[in-house]
Image (cartoon, rainbow, N blue to C red; front, side, top):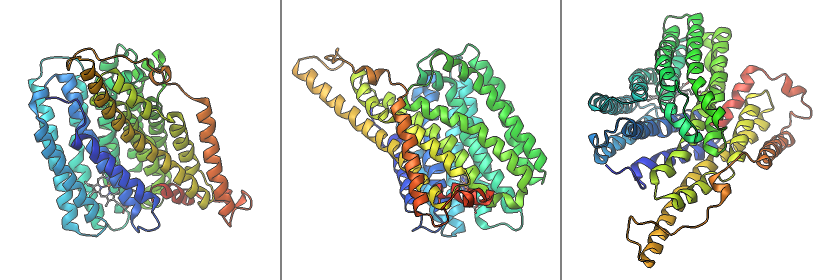
Length: 477
Ligand code: HEM
């Protein structure tokens, strides 16, 4: 099966879902229940779609079992997934329980089917390295039906502190299980490839050791609200964090070989930093808020896990992978990289500084302005990915035309053009870091100037944790 070139069902739905999420986030005052919608357009349309697509890509690369699952069958699965996502994102806000259940069943069914094909590949593949990545995908997929069931129960409405309990179980099973484990499974090989450096010698052994630790940690987190033991949840977070740090060791070693230098590696690094911060915040909140109060300030956790960790990882990975799979040789690749790294340092620093400001106890309007800046910086990455795809396709066509004129047969050596060193060797731009600080500062200043309660910082200092939740919510509300 040829995996090269553009492929609609692989490349476009994720861009459309994320664009819809960004549009709704920006138009948030118009839509009532927009926070839930934005979160799930990203979670289902962005993460779930991408995990299904890219886990197959990595399974192909690692197991060399390309012809097991033709593109037409993958297209059917991906189309069904879009139907399931649509049913859920319409069903939950419109309180149509049957539609939510139908969507959750379709999504779970599609992912079980997807996992079954991965398992089949694993069984028929010749022995080789990094089969552990596929095991991560399989364990991740096993959590999806459980997460979907919790989602359906949440949508029906639950009495007392059961809402908070199931919210923790639902979000962690999905974010740390389905998304987190898929990310860890992928980074084993993707991280050193993105850095263009050597993988740590013990990377595979370390990942094999980390998987049960992560799975046990997550199961413990999931069970703790169901048996009403917050301390057990904190233990679970501690175990998951330990598993996370185990997987980080070979990644750090690889980064010592070559430091992050491009948009994909900056974005992925920022994501890796947010995960432990989010886990520690979860433990603290479980311990001090309890299940009843936890949902009141859940936006803080959603922003850290969903945007800080998972979305930044997704955007970093896509910015690296899309040009690789479109292919076409060095010239189209360079054309794509030029677009994908455009303002790369600025985008990553702006998003992360803005996220930090949003999570601080600042006046509401400051938070709103800074959140809009973060959303726009995230949106710019989608634009860059699209421009990258278009630039690569255009360069491929140009190259084919040049080869035809020069009488070079298809598959021959194409005419060379000197490469721009800034494109081949991107690096951190100090000017863009300063630009990011200035952008966020300007947004904050605008917020202060419009905020009636902000003549001084006294007001902001008295803002409580609940307030900071609203702020985090502003980003996804
Ligand atoms: C199978 C389909 C799903 C359904 C039916 C569903 C449903 C729900 C519902 C009803 C809530 C509670 C909203 C509230 O607080 O009242 C919720 C919250 C949440 N879900 Fe899902 N969900 C699904 C899949 C996912 C997935 C795959 C993810 C992540 C990868 C996810 C992440 C979240 C997050 C982060 C929240 C908390 C949002 C907030 O801070 O308000 N969900 N979901």
